[in-house]
Image (cartoon, rainbow over all chains, first blue to last red; front, side):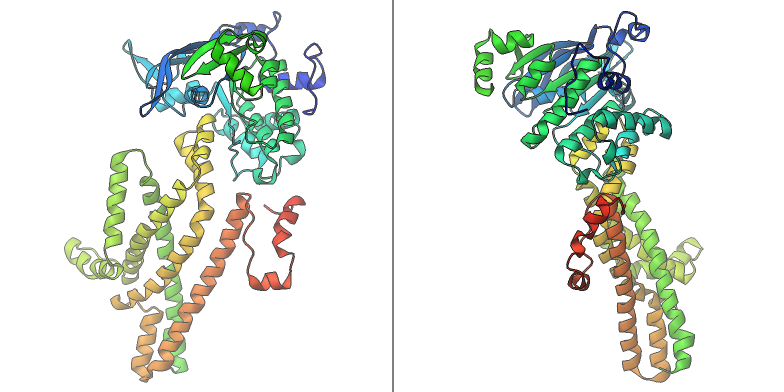
Length: 296
Length: 246
């Protein structure tokens, strides 16, 4: 099923409903009481960057950055390399810490805590708690080579979320079916192709049922003929679940396909944002036009 | 060497040598992991203390430490080890210090991306270490551990100086009793070699197992097998394909 893109209108097809079940809740429908009861998936602000600055030495990668992502939205970050796109994802995943400013996820400070009315750097435990809402897929897959495919997926749900082995197994099998790799679950990552590894990595991230999925150039390390399979799986997930996606990619057609918003980065700032239609067809900023002219 | 000397001194000596080797290797392994992990700690005081341990025990002689434990320690603290225990402790602590460097190096060789993947899945630091970093570092530790184990085996001859009746002690006794140096020392030399060879084979097996456990193709088992079975190198891939191994 990974080989075909499910039609958005027909999202009751088996593939689509499967993706709903396994990838964290159905698209919020009015009658979906579970979705409505959860304020985090009702389309309100989920991620906020408040005056975030990040430097590497003298190099200012993010400069006083402000932006927000609403729950359930799919946002694509585009821009030349070195413009700070990946840094945003790494900040959200707490692989980096901001030098200035704050990041909130679902109303909670990510790397800060409020103590006696003051904002202080958060402890490891607080960060871990907030981080559980965030999943990430890396450019280089980063599967654990010492675990077989199934265990790559079940390890974190069992040890971090406290699921039973059986629950985690069921969840992992469903996800492997979603990404079309059921028959490979007893293999080691080294025995899979890059595209297969990346699909396992997607399943592994989804097994934690995160609210936000961060996709960091997930097809850049793949052979060209393997890219489509991975993108199909992601389209499937984007169209059939209400997971929030933050995506750095050079696959512009994919970005156009799944995005609600496209953010153009240049030199650590968002210089323009808008719907994919607007951004790809009629951008305002000359730098955006120049960049898209070069990559499209 | 008479057969009486051989059976009543040398054979028990072999057994003592093997016991000391294995027990001090076990102690060294524990020390190596504890100190090696502590040396990668983010807490500076832990790193500092572990670093001190490493420097002190690397910089002192195992022989002198053994003599100190056997003869100075009882005078200073009014309590004494069984001689064999002094030997095991001295060897274990000294070789553990060397081993800690192996543990530290192998852990640092695990790609940072693996740590990041662990963070992205919200594992705690301990979980990352236990489930991701140590299992991946382990196969890389085995070859240098093998070297160290052989060094340790040969180092056990030092216990003969504190009157533990190991192989070397027994060979000396035989030499003095029979007044024949050549057979005693030749046998001794060969005995160390045979034990070392067996240990090396065992470690190679362990290494192959460990590599299979992280999905790596193990190195071919040697020229003989390659000669006899030209396709041997592909065995692993094939058996993996059939779901046979691992």
